Image (tube, rainbow, N blue to C red; front, side):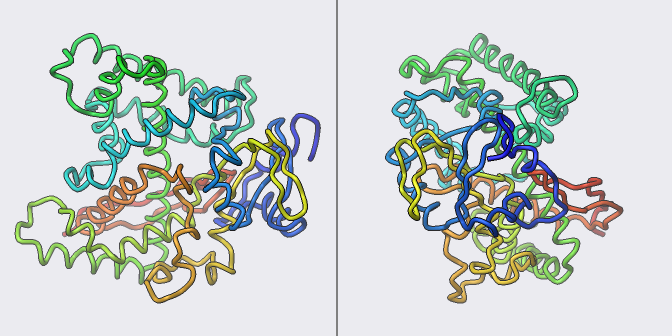
Length: 416
C-alpha cells in the first residue's frame, strides 16, 4: 500500500515514454494478476484489469458500486464525495445524460453536422458561444487541464494542481459571467435553445439546478470535449504522419467523397459521414492507443467478493482502459497502429466491450458519437484541404495523462 497518506501515488505519476500500459500498473499486474490493491492520494484503491469484473461493475452501478471521483477531480469539477448521495446522483445523472443526448446525441447530430473546430462546436451547442470574445482565453485555461486533474492534490505554489486550480477559477469566472449575462438579458421566450437555455429553463422545476451547479456542468462538459478530443486528434495526426500507408487509404476514402459529391461547396452530409468506414477504423484505433482517461473510477457500495478476496465497502475501484486496450489476448501486436484490425472479419477483438474509451454501462459517455463525428470531420477537412510534414517532437509521454515530451510540431500548407 506504499507510504502513509501518499501511498504509491508518486510512482503512479512517474512518466513513461510509451503508449503501453503505465509501468506502475504493468509491474503490479505482472506480480499480482489482473486485480491488485494500492493507496492513491490517501485512499485505498483496487485496480482492475479484469474484463469480466470491469463489465460486472459497469452493469451493476447503483447496486454494487457508485460513480466516484478522486479528491482532485471532485474539488476541481465541483463534486461532493458524500456517503448519502447515491440516489441524488442517479437522478441528476439521468437528467444530464438525457440533456446531453438532446444536444449532442445521434439524432441531434444528424441535423447539425458542421465543419468547425472543437472548442467552437462544443461551446456553440452549450451556450451560443461567441468565439471572438472567448476563444483564446478559454482555450488557454483548458489546455493541459487534464494534467492537473491527474496530479497529486497538493495545493501549494508551483505544483501542477495549484496551476490547475488557478486556471479553473479563471475559467469558472468566465462561465459565471456567461450564465449571469444570459439570465439577465434574454427573456425566457427568446432563449436560443442551446444547452445553457435548456438548463436555465428547467431551474424552476428542478431544485438541484442552482446557478453554481449549472456553471460546473457547463465547465465539465466543455472540458470533457475540449481536452480529450484535442488530445486524441493530436495523436491521430502523429500516427498518420508515422504510417504513410494508413494515411493513403484515409485520403483515398475522403477524396472519393469529394469526387462523388454533387455540390463541391456543400458541407458534409450525414450520409457521407456514415460512409467513412476506414475513418471509423482509424478513430477506433486512435482511441484504443490514446487511453486519454488513465482510469475509470467507482466506489464500492457494499463488500464485493471476487477471486476469493473481498473489496470492502467504501473502497475505490479503478478500471484501467489501457490494460484492456493493450492486452495481447484481445489485440494482436497491441502497440502497433493498425486500423485494419477493426474490419468486420469475425475477429474477437471487434467486440465493443474490448474498447472502453468512452466508459461502460449506464455511464457510457453520452457524447461518444459527438466525439467521433467531430474527429471524422476534422480528418476529412485536414486530409482533403491540407498537407503537412513533421518538424520536430512527437515523442509520446504518459504521466499518467497522454502528452508529448517536446510537443509535436508540424508544418501545414494548403493543398495545391
